[in-house]
Length: 220
Length: 220
DNA sequence: TTTATAAATTATCACATGATAAATATCTGG
DNA sequence: CCAGATATTTATCATGTGATAATTTATAAA
Image 1: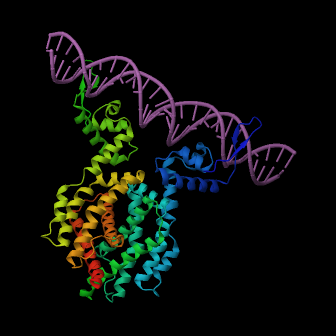
Image 2 (image 1 turned 45 degrees about the vertical axis):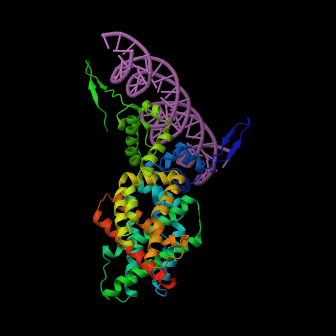
């Protein structure tokens, strides 16, 4: 990716030696690993990561004791640090209806997670680490789906119960999963149609609104 | 997996040499590859496939010119040959309501595709071959989703148009994708709850029924 | 039993990979 | 400008991998 070179007196090309601070170099290595692993999976070689980062392969081992710890750093960069606090602001903005609020939220959210890097790493990760998957599932459930259920209940005027039951989460999970799947379709096909994405979100919310209306109507 | 051995006079263990017909051997190799690739991905080694099949690694190359062609044989076994014609019978049985019919269909269908082998190979495949993914998407759309839309339209009494438009497929795709995602959740978590599965299908169909009722009611 | 066919194994190659040790060049503080 | 600290590279190892050639042995037909 960034393999710069110099030419010495004898004409042979010699790599430039950029001396960086450990923190900066570490960041660059992680960025390179994110790109490479997203493309080739976690079986991508450390040599390719190094080439992509513009360094030699052994240098990688000054920053990470082994490949596994590099992979963990990639997880942290992509999954842990990807939650945008602005999303929380949208989710909590009660000046909008639940429908409009979650429309806005999902449009912002999918702008990040529908990037090929995120989606592919997510798939690769879930194929090798059930833990990462479980952890992120928890995040989605607590940060997105439970708020959705709660706010919708309030909107429908049946706010007696505070806890969100597993049964109530089934439909939101189904729809959220459907949206993820939609994003995956687009990424495999190489599309990046933001209008179609907004439509998909609209349909998803439409279905949720109809479903909850029918369900909570009888019990309110 | 099936590495049988014999002991010769000097006590050293020597592999048994089972001489099979080419067709039978080929089948065994593919079965072994299906198991191994489902677990380790397509980067699983040919040596491991061979061990799993109870043969030596070079023998594999008498049946497949290279690893890629073995992978293609795995695709064929798992994806091409997995469609059960009994499913078509269910889909075409108009003695049942659309809801009941697709409930039955999806319960049978997911019994097959929610197996870890199918789901994992599906994920591995879609990460490396957009073609396989596109091909299967087409199958789902033509065999499942378009029939669903058509039959539902008839049931709602608005059978004027025969063609199914892309817009009409958005909701079914979202729900179908959500169900796939549900299966993936279960497989990663190691669950195999068929009651939960039936419930998920019920909710999915409930949402589709409500959605179509609301949508086609105005235009019929 | 004998023998020819081909299924299966042993031996091996070239290359890629994760990882380590030693040598070298770059930057910073004095 | 110099010297020490250390970021970076070169050289290297052990192992794993896809693939091929040569050899051996099981099996069925004569």
